[in-house]
Amino acid sequence: MALLQIAEPGLSAAPHQHRLAVGIDLGTTNSLVATVRSGSAVCLPDAQGRNGLPSVVRYLSDGAVDVGHDALKAQKIDPLNTISSAKRLIGRSLDDIARDQLPYRFGHGDAVVTLATRQGDKTPIEVSAEILRALRQRAEDSLGGELTGAVITVPAYFDDAQRQATKDAARLAGINVLRLLNEPTAAAIAYGLDNRAEGTFAVYDLGGGTFDVSILQLSQGLFEVKATGGNSALGGDDFDHRLFCHLLSQCGLSQLNEQDHQLLLGLARAAKESLTTDESATIQATLSDGRDVSATIRREEFHNLTQHLVAKTLEPIKQALKDAGVGKAGIQGVILVGGATRMPHIRQAVTTFFGQTPLTNLNPDEVVALGAAMQANVLAGNKSADEWLLLDVTPLSLGLETYGGLAEKVIPRNSTLPTARAQEFTTFKDGQTAMTIHVVQGERELVADCRSLAKFTLRGIPPMVAGAARIRVTFQVDADGLLSVSAREQTTGVQAQIEVKPSYGLDDDTITRMLKDSMQHAQDDAQARARAEAAIEAQGLLEAVQAALALDGDLLDEAERQNIDQALADTAQQLAHGDADTIRQAVQALGQATDTFAARRMNRNIQRVLQGKNIEELES
Ligand code: AMP
Image (cartoon, rainbow, N blue to C red; front, side):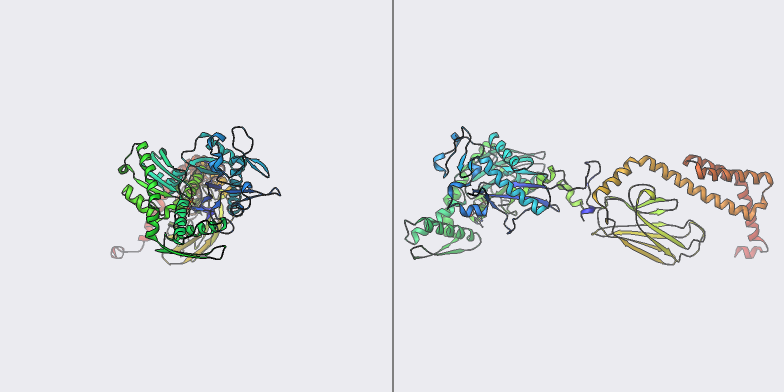
């Protein structure tokens, strides 16, 4: 239905065009890109169907750069050249960061953080640009075109330097930044909270390594971040670690080598994730020295083990509420963001704390990217949210040709599909037994200026005087944009019909041009229609008077006949060369010149009818 989707004309050079815009969630551990397709936001997966791109960049010895899953896999074997969590460093100076806790060699830049790799010193901006470039490539491959721009999300607490650095990274990646959007705001947009008039909302975001809480206030469609809080060293990883420690003590293990440590930590993480849906999880592994490890953990046990971590998230919420100056009761909605919020005891704790069920029906890993995509779609000038439902409309009016070359619109443009309309038409000439239905498309008044779609003929109309036949013409456009036109003569039921695809061969530019033409020519068209209507009337009157003269011309004396002939000639002259006004004046003069003649004809006709009949016959 792409061809039938149309915006208001005049908004841009090509209002029908859909601009490719995406939302990017540039995360500390994972990044995502999403777009709006047919009115809904969706994440764009890679060729393997994975939505998340690990925010990891590896600089290889041959000058190539790996981004994402391959880089993550190689991190252990090439840690100095594989950069993760660049988001924690972007826009920060060397003084801002705890250098000794990071596994990198730092370059010699002054204030700006640089990381020494085998491809030279890299700033976090350059590292982030690699991630953004990979996401841009993914989007362009999957959308099949160049991006108009992107909305990129940043944490609500990012300062100006961090925001500017994120923009610089996007510029390096060749991305036009439509807007930087706060992550919690993006989540609120994804849930459609921006459609409400007012409200205060809490966003609870627990990812792999960080916890953020934000209090947002929506006022007249604009979100303001009233307060933020959190813990940059608390996340799903801590739950994995707690389970891992429990496993060690249960199995009597200590002093694991790096390989076994990673193995068991990975299994603990998988067990944690499965406990979200299952009542229990079993961990089984064979360690590098051949020992077998096996343990089963129940959900309740896991919850007891990690309840203190859940409780740790509540303190920052209380502080944020205090900072925002609102109580729990003043919160209209709570949104959960981040994969770790899938854990049932997190959901339970949030429900108990706020006294309301949080919003969870969107995927918590994707919700930020989805909201960013929705915002990008609007900023790029595509349909605004409330117009999405009206996408399937007729882009141009559909109608048919009536006598005099006039286009009569039956289905006006922008009618929502499917649609059907019927209108009655009649014959123009006495004894007319066939009618050609010429289906046209466009906004102009004259058929010559519209697009001809199809022609078909309705035959078998019983001979009647002009204007007596009733031909019902029905236009029907189905949900796929297929137009069928049928014409039915009402007394006999004879019928004819045709099917056409009005969008066939009609590209965006053609629609735009046709709409522009109709606006530019509106005045000329109105005059042309007025003239055509006057001409139809003049033509009809000329023919009727000529026929009457042939039959009853003897009713006129010479002067009267001359007078009528003169009026006929004037009318014919105006019909050929005059405008709507002069034609109408000529028609009026012809009417006056034939008044007496018409009255005499009427008398003669009555006499003819009455001749030779008695009163009884007439009464019956
Ligand atoms: P994010 O940073 O939003 O991608 O969140 C990653 C964290 O979410 C990791 O700690 C994951 O183990 C955790 N996570 C993902 N899925 C689940 C799940 N089904 N149950 C519990 N935690 C999950």
